[in-house]
Amino acid sequence: MTTSSSQPISEALFARARQVTPGGVNSPVRAFGSVGGHPHFIASADGAYLTNADGQRLLDYIGSWGPMILGHNHPGVREAVAEALQGGTSFGAPNEREVLLAEKVVELTREQGVERVRFVNSGTEATMSALRLARGVTGRSHIVKFRGNYHGHADGLLVEAGSGLLTTAEGGLGEAAPSSAGVPQEYAALTLVSEYNDPAALDTLMQQRGHDIAAVIFEPVVGNSGVLIPTPEFLAALHRVRDHGALLIADEVMTGFRLSLQGACGRLGIQPDLITWGKIIGGGLPVGAYGGRAEVMENVSPSGPVYQAGTLSGNPLAMAAGLATLGELQAKPELYEQLERYTAALADGLKAAAQEAGVPLSVNHIGSMLTAFHQEAPHGSVQTYQQAARSDTAAFAGWFRAMLRQGVYWAPSQFESIFVSAAHGDAELNLTLDAARRAYAELK
Ligand code: PMP
Image 1 (tube, rainbow, N blue to C red):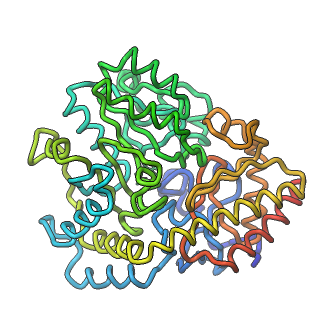
Image 2: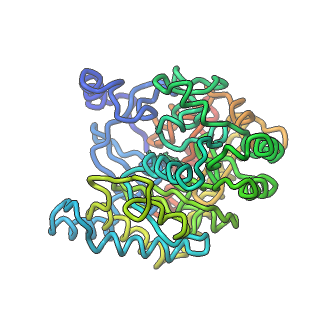
C-alpha cells in the first residue's frame, strides 16, 4: 500500500485550520512539528486503518493515542454507543451506566486496591484530581514526578514533562522546569522531579523531603519518553515512598487495560494508593477516572472535603463505549496474547530490517506498546530518559516520512509509544515490515 506524497485536501484543511485554531490542531503532537510535512486530516477509521480526507488508506499505529485497543469502529462499541444515543446524550444526573462501569473497574482492579472510582472527562482531569485528593488527605503541598513522564497538562504536572513537550520548541530536551510558559515558578516549585529507573535518587529525595510530599506520581510503564520499562529495584523504591507517609499514584492513563486487564500494576505487581485512567476506559469517547481504597476515595466531595466535579462526567455515551470495550476485553482475554505476539514479531522484524540496512536501532516493547529508538543502546535496551534523549531524531523523522509515504502511520515523534490493536493481523505485520525495510534502506 502506498499513498501518493500529495494530500491536497489535507493541506487545504490544514491551511484553513491554522486561520482559526492555534497551529491548526487541537493537540500539539498532531501537527507533525518534529517530523516535518503536514498532518493528514482523517475522514474515517475502521479496524487497523484510517482513511484520510484525500481518500488514501493508512495503516494506523496510533490508535487515537491508545484508546482503540479493539481497532477502530468496533461493531460492539459502535452499537453500544448507538443504543445509548437513543436515550439522549447527557443528563447531568446519575445514570445506570456509570454504576455498571464503576463496578466493572472495581471488579478488574480490586487486587490493586481499588474499591471506589470517580469518572472525569480526560486523563488530565484524572491526574489533577488524584493529586488534589492526595494533598487533601495528607495535608502536604509537594509532589514528586519523574523527568520525561507525562501526566496531562495540569499546571503542576507541566514540569520536566514528556510527550509533546519533548519535541516542541518551548519545551526542548534538557530544559529546566517548568516545561510550559504560563506555569508560575512558585507553583512549579511544588513539583519535585526525580529520575525514572533511578532508585537511589528517589530514596535520597524522599529522605530529604519525604515529610513535605503528598504523593509520588509515575507512569508504571513509561510511554511518554518512548517506552521505558521499570526495573524491579525502581518499583521497590516506589513502594518505599509510603514509609514517608506519601501516597503512591500509578498513572495508568496509557497502560490501564492495555498491558493487561489489570493494567501495568496487575502485570508488574504494583500496589499503589491511587490509580488514574483514561483512553481505553472510554473506548474512544472522552473519559478519565481515578480510584483507590474507600478510606482514601471517600475524601472526595460530596463524601469528603476534597472538591471535584464535572458537567459531563459519567456521560451516558462515553460510559457505554467504555463498558463495551472493557466487556469485550474481559470476554476475550486471549486478545492480550495476540497483541503481545504481534508486537514482539514487529519488534523482531524492525530490528532485523534496521540491522540489514546498518541503521542503529534499539526497540523497547511490552504488551502492545513499542518504541523503536534510533540509537545503539549501551546495555542492549534504553532504560532512562537521558538515554532515550540520545536518539537520532533526524533519522527517526526521515524513517517516519518514508513509512507514511508507504501508507504506514507511525506516531509522529521519536518519544512516543505506538499502539497495536486487536485488528492488526498477519497482513498488517507483513505490510509494515516490507515498508520498514525500504524505509531503513532509504536512511542509509
Ligand atoms: N497520563 C498519561 C500517562 C498520558 O499518557 C496522558 C495522555 N497521553 C495523560 C495522562 C493525559 O491524558 P489526556 O490527554 O486524556 O488529558
